[in-house]
Image 1 (cartoon, rainbow, N blue to C red):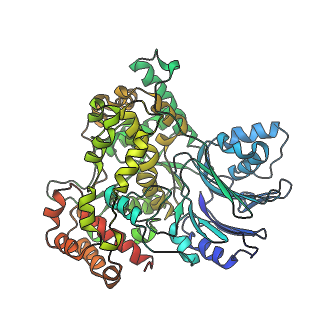
Image 2 (cartoon, rainbow, N blue to C red):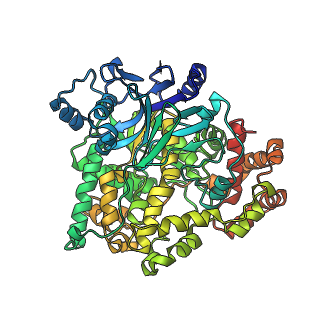
Image 3 (cartoon, rainbow, N blue to C red):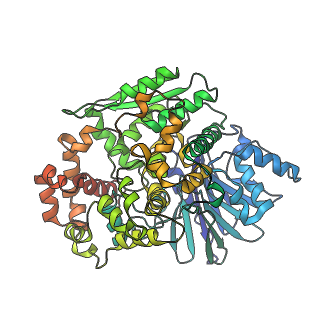
Length: 594
């Protein structure tokens, strides 16, 4: 787990080593344990290291194998690296470290471009094939690890965060109107390849990009499960699916124990993280460290779920730590959280994850988390009505349930320079939902949730906030084999019991019923959900700042209405519009975007 950077030049000029150094320094928080720089004439690579596997200097990066003609910077973890290492040893290769980084290099030498098919894990990397004068960029199947790109004529830069690319300079920081449309439509989500800035793009998940020394490039999507019923599964009933999902989840949890340092769990008290704790205990993990966070309550709204996390901690005898933070800690935390964001993220719980990660990182370097279960196993309220919707009506049902605003309202929000003639957000949703490879409306929406939306909301949120403190978070519910199995599972098994039915059936084997049958929870931060007091003042300051007025992202009359009557204005759409707008401006201003 680390931070990676690089620059490739295609015009005969040498890479700007100082720019790569600035980008690498900007990622110090992602990799506090070491740094490195490597140059090959037309490519320079930079790296910040967080030591998780092979704590010795032999695991340092950039890693170069002169005998293979390869160099690599890598962010993430390859969970099956011991097995791959043994397979490659038997094929005649030697190793100089015990790291998963070197396994990637040797795998490329052995399998060529198909090496990604053999990697089980979360990863983003830049690999230089010196003989072919080729740069190979890749991102893991579910987009757990980020990879940002800035291209100009004759040059390509890449980094683990967008702010790192800004630190290098010479980036087009004008606002992308299409990305802004997505941000305001989908709970602040901007799917790959776009970002809110015109000059920065993201490599999409499950994508391999081959960049030649003359600047030519090609992309290959190397993994895309179909959401259809497989003939081989025709005889499976509910109990068979329960057993298959249980086995796959147990494998996913065990895979994510590979580490040379202890592994903890972020325990919210919900079904998903509680199930991870239970399966780790079942696998023989003793004295497991678990962590929960809570905030001040507001009226009838609780600021914590300690009742449930305590129940799970007692049931499995974990070394549990409650972390309670008062409201007065939130405003400075919001500012720090915004600085840590790789992109603007309007979810309230992003601040909670930042504060939780700060505390957890004092005790462990690696933790497992329950992110992704709702998207993979149909845990949201809008999934269940889709069971009665024909395949061709999925888009209308989804947009009605999920969108923050329709196109007409959105054009009353943004300034004239950012208004669009077409509803680009609905167009993109319709395109994805109509694509072949999904059997029912439920299948199509779960595919959209998992492969388009999820990488740029909960996954990006958790990676950004945890890595801000040098904490590696692993997500078993996003295991590639588990996700593929879930994609083939008939929707009725996932929709049962109010959602995540097959997962709840697995949980009943190992968890107390009170945890399974509880009302669906969330990461409660009442002070942020209400956007009042000092938090509201911070948001108002950002929206009324000279930079915001000059930028003109939002119509002044709309902002004035939100600031005057935020509660009434927000209730109609069921989302916190004031926070969403203010957060975007606060992020732009905090990162010096003019």
